[in-house]
Amino acid sequence: MYGRFLTQASTTQACRTDEKPGQTMRGRSILLLAAIAIVALAGIMLAIVRSSRSELKERANSTNVAQVALGRTVYAQHCASCHGANLEGQPEWRKRKFNGRLPAPPHDVSGHTWEHPDDAIFRVTKQGFRAFAGPQYETDMPSFEHVLSDDEIWATIAFIKSKWPPELVERRRSRAR
Image (cartoon, rainbow, N blue to C red; front, top):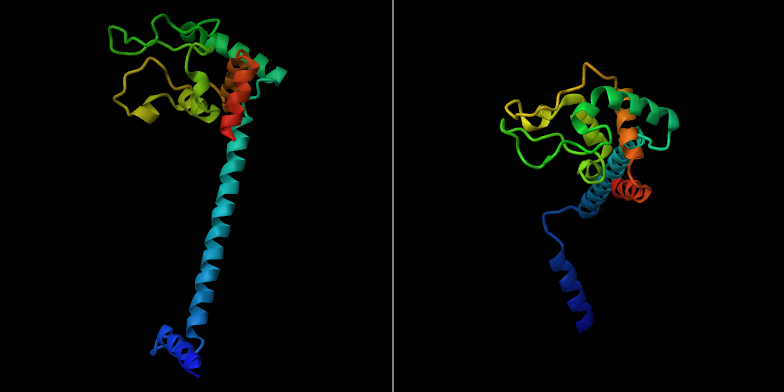
């Protein structure tokens, strides 16, 4: 009898007196459904982001012979004069020139291009550095938005990647996943 009184007392204290029966359960059900909806929405958003990333990273395929050939031609016409015929960049590319601008970096493994995702390389090539660093940023790198098509830019990136060692390309691919 004493045990039943304690159980009944603790149960009574746990309930709020201003709630109607079933109100607590209804509130919990609504919260549970809201939490499930939020988790489902987050999952959908993650799937969309992942699929768009995989589309972007595959746009520059270093094993696509036709794309690499187009990229080689575009690179020779529009990039090699600054970044070098062999992707070697300009001498002392980490040291600012007399005008305060940085020389063109190499696109081979001695540079840092391989450290950036393909979509970032694409955006800088298409829009130029000023689109990201601000209009006051001084650079010799032009925007190619009105010069090259998107396919030509992706092909150029594919050509550059085709010159990197296979283990480097795979490491970048693994990092992008």
